[in-house]
Image (tube, rainbow, N blue to C red; front, side, top):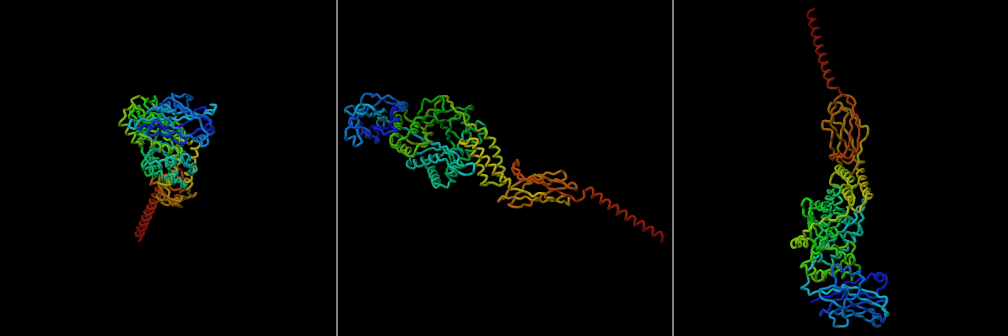
Length: 637
């Protein structure tokens, strides 16, 4: 059975401003459909600011294709094809403020307009006052479908890409991007109302982190609903922790930063949504070049999705938009192109009851296209579409004949298996990426400082996680250099708090009475937890360190007495300098330093030898003298 429907309206340019700012003469009350005999339908109109005797004229224009469908809504041409008719408004119609018109396409009645199966035509409805001045027009794309068995199927996959300002502020507070919350809320509610719809989504995982830390019950509920939908209708794609452009990092030879953001993003998605994100797909921005795809491919991304404006030359085939790009090293990358026509209509939706049908006119032309047995399209959901319009869009699609809504992986796998690859040599026509070259050295230094900090306080530790989140947030595309400097300042302020937590009393003097000993050193840990430090020992040459010049120590909170093994080479006063530093390989952080005075009161090794020799000589001399005196006495007797 043929189906004919009026699917949308828009005013011509010469009357648009008037219609938007003042009450319209005519408006459509409901979507009309063809009757079962396929040659007539009812047109229900609302009448305003018209009088008895005023005229309504109805006619169709030339048939449309996908391109001219858009053009027809900005065209000033309004000459009828063949048939047109006029209606003179009666007093009764004026009082009721409504009029029902029975339209026919068979040309056998007075109320006939020209149409034929398998076409889409603009249906023009004009109103005039009695002297035929001050006209106003409505235009409806009139769809005359073929029998259902003759319609070609359309498969649609939807994606949603949500960008958001980072929720973590430089002062440690969380402020979630309101626009991102609205987008997620609208999408969640629309999906809950349409459980058959599946959408691939990319969203900054930092926003999920912000939702988990929010005190607002609505944010908590939104996170729960996202978690539930992630198991049924949302296909979550790997995303960097904060919104970030991979080409911007590759361009400054720091792609490892973007890879780290992906890893942190994956962990956050897994923690918050209890699912593993899909790393096989990526939505690439218009700054990407073939080298970007190569870098992304090395971290696990196999299929890329981008906009038509990014591809040069423009593919002739806009249905089933699957192409390949060849890298300089011979790698071949699979690229799918978003359907720009349907996305154009979605971005123009304003009226829930009428404008959504305009998009169906475009889908109708696809079903009527006999040159392709199968059509596969990837449609991007606009970020600013309202919940009502999105819900109406999904609901209408499910009622439209021969529309199949598929998950993104299912559609892509199907196209790859069944579509012949376009062998045209394409390139990516890119725009310049954001300049983030000044961030790299600042991030390097801050990262090293955080690493040293974490070695001091022990890992894992919540403070360390907080500092790393601050560091990753500096990669957000939404931040300028002034913004990022505030984050770095917070990082260093937190590290300084730990550095200031270690002190040692001055004038720690020590007296040595033996060649080898363990001298005491007092160090105060004012933190409320254990800390790991390294003592770097330096001598003026009189003192050596049998255990080495580097001594690792674990400090308890409070006062710590540390024993330092030393060996003295000579008597007298000497000094050793003790540096208290972080235990990382580079000993980056200097926590404290002090000098110890060591007084050595024992004899040296040579002195002891001389002393022993002298004693031995005196003893020998005394014994010899005594024996001589004894012999002398015996002789006298």
